[in-house]
Length: 378
Image (tube, rainbow, N blue to C red; front, side, top):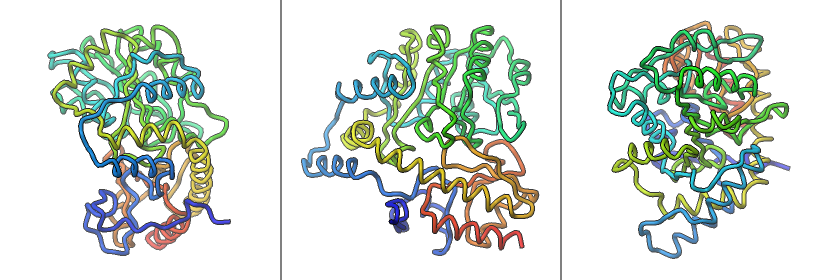
């Protein structure tokens, strides 16, 4: 029986950033932007329809039910016992990262904010958006897996360093950091009194059944009290366009700093964002499990095919629907455009010789894209 995820949905001419922004030829397969080409779960669509049917689009607030369901989710999925007042609901994760950077060091524009690269571009770009200094140190690839170069991390810290931005699971490297790795990060941040901003937006998309997502703030009181943890239903349930995210900030002083940093910049969540987010966390767990199974099969298919293509290589990813592919030809992402596949060049994330490919799409589309990649290599 065909999976619901096999349905090919025409997203052209829908003002889709992924499908329309580049004005590509009609036969182009776009695989850059991190949203999936799958229809949202029925429960979410039904919830959005109820908002439409009601017809009044006034200002809204996040209901207690949503906060309680999210708190229980953190406990059930990640063994993280939190309090409802720690939650700050926000319309986007990137604006949240920017607000944390704004809060870090206050108005001291000599403050430094650290991130390992390669990484999702806003993580190392956001400090500069608020006139802070972005400090980048290299990640390390070893034995088929990317992780932190802890020596490089520690030697990059100066008295001006205020914040480390963590991405876990990692975009685009697909790493799910182990407890031991996170404990090292937390210990270094404790020693140098750094705050931690942890982007955990892909935490519900673990592909490797032997891996488990661990929020860094769940490691203990010290890590908890220096952390801003950012999560959202957007990637998991393909509702990024609704603008629904949450910051979990246990330390009341840091929470107040975050609230002050976002004042005047963030609108409240829309009725659609609230309805969609609530339905996602309350009603769509079975759909999420089916999605992860489908993505794992897509990943394995892509892994086998890419590693048979001369000049390309891909490591096994532990999470996300984003593949980080090494290429001998540093101009390969541009060459792919001639063969009808759009990806993102690795330089966007701070590293040459790679490209990122989104495999959150129907299998038939993925197979055609791989066939075109093979032809591009020749």
